[in-house]
Amino acid sequence: MKRLLVSLALLLLMPIAALNAAESANGAKPNVVLIFIDDLGYGDIGPFGNTKHKTPNLDQLAKEGRKFTSFYATPVCSMSRACLLTGCYNVRVSIPGVMFPGAKNGLNPNETTLAEIVKPQGYATTCIGKWHLGHREPFLPTKQGFDSYFGIPYSNDMTIDPEHARFAKDCVFREGMTEEKARAGAIRNTVPLMRGDEVVEYPADQSTLTKRYTEEAIKFITANQAKQFFLYLPHSMVHVPLAASEAFRGKSEGGLFGDAVEEMDWSVGQIMKTLSDLKLDEKTLVIFTSDNGAASGSSAPWRGKKGTTFEGGVREPCIMRWPGRIPAGTTCNQIAGNIDVLPTLAKLVGTEVSKDRVIDGRDISSLILNDNAPAVRDTHLYFNGGSNLAAIRQGDWKLFLIDPTTPRNTPAGRRNANRNSETSLPLFNLKDDPAETTDVAEKHADVVARLKEEAQRREKEIRDHQSPAGTIER
Image (cartoon, rainbow, N blue to C red; front, side):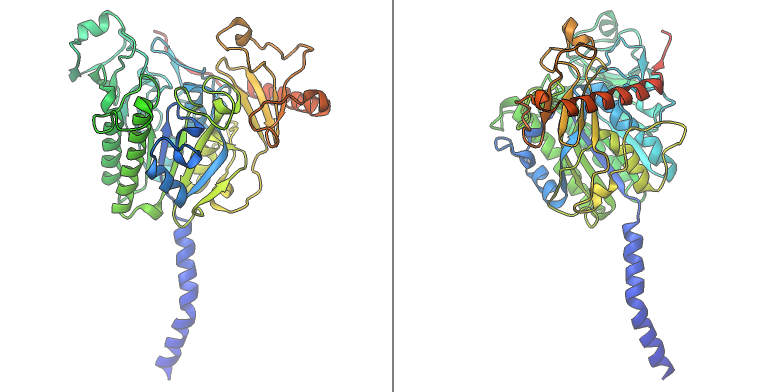
């Protein structure tokens, strides 16, 4: 009888034990793979409407995860990376639109990065790919919370810093290059490939970068499979000059651009296969997105491309996958963006963002993990490449504060043209007019006034609490 009672008790306790085990698994801190593509437009891949490029691995990622249709970045490169890694608008951390090889500044080491959020929680961290937040030694990834770094320090159409480059003793010089020639003068489209803080190949063989980044990523995942890891993979492609390895060159229907996109999709597939083979699928959150709108490709169905603050310049494809946690085959239409990644990861790994700084992003874990979750934030600010506040979105309304049709490389585009003028500010309703074709400012003067006041208030707060970029004397 006693044995029977014990058996019955165990049977009754089993559902509770199973529930506790499930709760424990659901509360586990995930590995994180963050794939950040360069210049990939909203309409460049299958899950977001492209029918020309073959992206089966991204198609599968979307089937197994959640798409975000109002996920925002910025118009150009460096500012987007600053937003992603710090959770702040780039103006708050004083990072310009684009940094160049002659720059003496970079992301201030005093800022807290994604890597520095997860590293104290026991995560192995690496950055593989394009950094673009300062190429000088104090600003490199290994000074910003990453255990290791392999990649190019800025965009692949740039050059080398001939004075300050540190060449490894075994640096591979290609195309007849020598250290003496490299220091004699910079040549466009010849960028250094770095490991840690040293140049290991110059110029980098750009046709092999996607393949080599992928190999490095797989090595990192494999080496750290028994612990938690954070892999930040900011690809160099599909920024110009476009390149693809021999296995993909000439194989797509979209020319060299299509080749580069399809190789990038292959890279995603290799990483997903590695996670599956190592039985890490359910332990890993994968985030796939881009830094700005299309340059060579398509931002359809939105208006505008890279460099603009129309939706096509800043609204990015984004897919997140975490089997067992993120509902498969779902879509989130709420406002979100790369500034939200840092506070969200802080929540998921069980830590808090430091209270000594202002973070613009919000924890969007509810949008990631739950169906039909309400909005976390209803407002987004659009800073342009000149670090001016160019537009504001609140709900479905978007008000431009600077004429969006004025090229930013003109005097009018570089100044805050319309902010203090009496001219009408263009207003669009993104729900009724997602392509931003019909200015409705005259019909909604109250909305214009409200959003203009809100924009001024928010910008003042940011500039009043702005932190400096890191700076080096020489």
